[in-house]
Image (cartoon, rainbow, N blue to C red; front, side, top):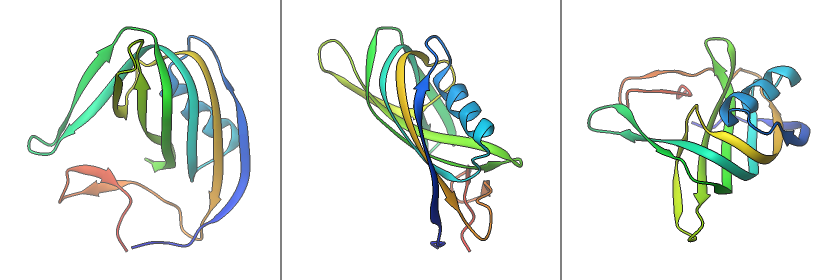
Length: 143
């Protein structure tokens, strides 16, 4: 079910070249005290690691792309996992031929340049991820 949230502060900035994209997004949220929110970004990567959740096997499979890639779109959310800010993001990447790659943003994606926008949300109850038996994923609980 849906829960009412209200938009709080908005943050914009650039992430450091050479940093791991997922880790840099998470550290930005930790530094600003963001425990619930929305993340968007554009830019470029020198390397990307994308995940695909195999629903039958209930585990992630990964592909590593080693060429230079444009971040066509990155969208994600911020919530709590084990009491700490956790960024869950999906990304669409374009290569030099205009071919599009996409999937779950995984550790190991290296930033060439990245501009990020984060909207912090306020909620009466925290959004804490919990194991969902039906999917095998850590998801927001249904209330």
